[in-house]
Image 1 (cartoon, rainbow, N blue to C red):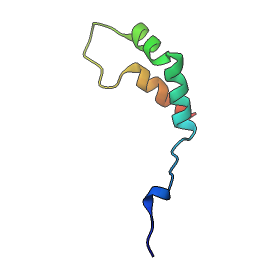
Image 2 (image 1 turned 180 degrees about the vertical axis):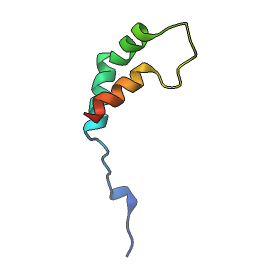
Image 3 (image 1 turned 60 degrees about the vertical axis):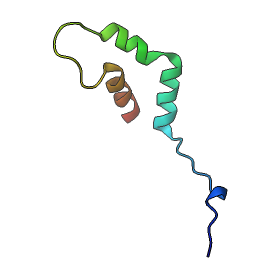
Image 4 (image 1 turned 90 degrees about the vertical axis):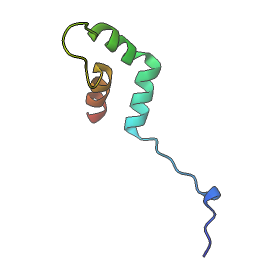
Length: 59
């Protein structure tokens, strides 16, 4: 049996990708990063905007 992979469509849109895309279009990650940025202390490993999106997506 031969399968033509060109005829197979995959979809990965789910709640998480929809919500992250919506937040990015609203500009929320830039707003969070602009207000939470600090020149003091050690540099962040994960930006605050990514942490906020992770919290919102997990709800």
